[in-house]
Picture 1 (cartoon, helix red, strand yellow):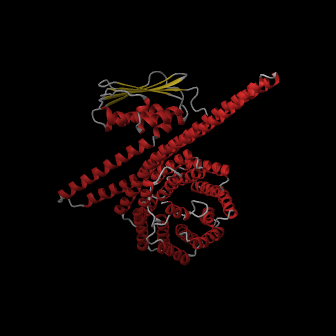
Picture 2 (tube, one colour):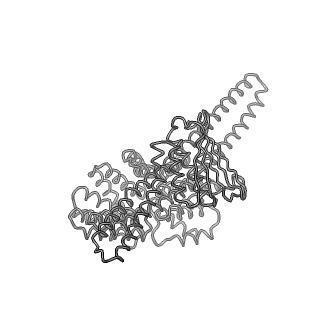
Picture 3 (cartoon, helix red, strand yellow):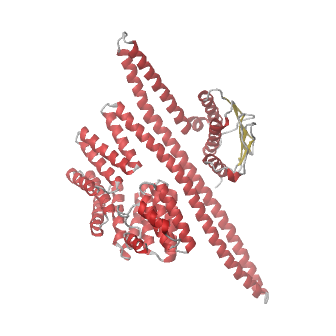
Length: 611
């Protein structure tokens, strides 16, 4: 097994992560080796290989394998393996769209590579950091990291590591519109692809060269590159490059007024993305097809593709939620590891201070020096603790902002996309109903039923859109938004009486972030009432004083036995506590079997929003 593992590691090149595993080495073979391996450095390398194998198609599984390899490498003191695991986790979080945690992982890997003088790890970390910034539309900052990674690869030298970096530089210049530079670096990377037999990077560079040629108006060359990428990728698991090439051909056909070839090419892009499990490609191809069919006036097919795109968005949003939970666990593990290392360092410092204290008995000067050093150390420890708390709070705030932004984007897409298509379909059905002869009552009845169904669908989409993007909250404030939420709840749930009480004055509006978090907590609590409580009445009380804002959600449902806080492992309660911690608020849950449930949130107004 050790000889086979060394062969696998050899495919990475000198740097260690430059090339993907060949398609002949699949996850099943790696898992079989993992099952018979011992908990040593070989198992660390196997787990990293498994993580790499899953990165493009199942980033959540890649994160799980990456975390296992990092924990084992840290326990073994295998620092190079721990650095590789962190690099792998950075790419997995990057593929899942969690850029803050991807950057955090790559920065941690770079710090460890500097400590152990691992130059290949430095190049990989800079390449990953550059790609993360490029994905966040910061190509100039990305180029700084890419060129630093290129210098590291050339200094080693490591051609296997240099190969993908050159293509990434070309991709960044394409974002900036500097097409000559984009072509120069991408062609350099492509030549290295052929020398290193890096088929993965080769196919991606061919598709990228097609995009560059298309932007330069060189359509025959662009078609040639796209076709070469497609032919080279035959039988290879690179659905993202295939999707890019087929969509490039579709755009060229559309520019020449050839709708049928454009639809056929886009359909191939959708097919290869579905076969490879490439969700982003399915989303892009579906949106392209929906736009094309809408232009051609084929509302039914446009709606079908838009519906598929909406489903992919929902699955990506669900994946992002699960990845965020993994990211929080990963960040907490890094924090605990850092604290443990600090504890070891503190223990070493304490032993040294005790020795100095024993020597200090011999003279007052030594004793005074010991006291001064101790005070400085304690002050530094306190400053580090405060800084760590500030960074954790900032990270939580960024995660909540990302979540809220994603909710609003999905809500807007539902309202502006699916809602508009359904409205157009309703108008067409109404026009058709008016044109049918009056002697066809059966047809009239079917059309009336179809129009009623479309109307119900529009109302349902609007309800979901309003829940994701509460316009009343942004325009009128928290009390009005809560009243509107309870009104919709009472209308949508038969037999449930929903009431809002506002004892005392509401006062001026709070910060939008505070009102949004309180609103989301109330929304989550009401959803739990509808799902689990079997209640006939729910009351929301919002009371504000000079020092505190209190939200109380009370129902008369069946209730439950309240367990210890650590036993509430559901994602809903996790979200409630996370938002409450960010507000520095107290969250209390009171319930008993057959006596309903009361959730109380107390937000101190003097400290809300402090960094």
